Image (cartoon, rainbow, N blue to C red):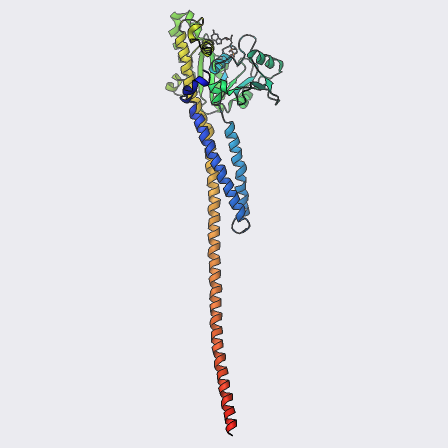
Length: 418
Ligand code: GDP
């Protein structure tokens, strides 16, 4: 659906859990930044009186400005990342295109993805690609052009090409979902490098397998490696090309049950990443090719089923949509937990540390005030004493003078009478 006619759909999307949480935590960090700036200004004004704020404390408080700015920058860039893996031609690019509701990634024979492709939203409304070692924006208007641009680059299998696509063309991109397509897992990959470079910050992994065959050892090995590096990665398994089953309806249930059992056992017993119940919500039987075709028709305002389709299309299309809903729920909750939890812990720590410094400063100021009051009292007492002494002294002097005068008077009157 185009963004315009999908507003109510968008508001009810589970992705909103992430979108709203991101807005909220961004607002909180704006407040924290204000608080830190106030604290810095206050501490600087107190620094004139060195004994109140220790210079170490002042430096520490000032340092929080850079820290908070760093967190805010990361927060702005935080997104939900989904990475797709599987053997060449299982349909990874087609699944991504179907989810994006547009043919963005080249797919099919002759268009094997030979490096990592990351599709993310562009705010400017432009579509372009940027290769790993360059900052040059190469304009991309169509899939053909994109395929051509990718061919002319000499790219290693672990390299990453960013594809920016207008956010207003796709709800998932607008809500900050980033898609990563990988080269086929069968092309002698350097799995450790792949995991280090592209997987450690992924919120969800989608294994696109081929429903016409069983899970391959190479596919399994990759996820074994991933789950040693990440604790309980979120893995979905798409048994793609399920439309092929339509040609053999008599085996459909049997084949499905067999795939299901193996996939559940892989997630629950081998990888131990989820429970049996959770695994049932992680494994789907779909046809990405049909889903993409249906979406392209819907974009043109035509019914989804108007193309030439194999039997059972409505079920497969429903299952694809079911996958998307469960995926959206999983990725947004997981991203909120892993990404924002860290930020909120750090935010709390910064506020607590500043509070401790301010509290210490307050205590220091109180102590200083008490000391000054005691000193004042001492001076006051000393003055009082001196005053008393003076008073006594003056009295004494007065008495002496009076006596002297009386004495002189007596002597004068005596002399006069003589
Ligand atoms: P990738 O190498 O894993 O990215 O695979 P692609 O997405 O490029 O798909 C390889 C070929 O398989 C393309 O010609 C697709 O049209 C086709 N394909 C993808 N998904 C399906 C599907 O569900 N059913 C059928 N019949 N063909 C599919």
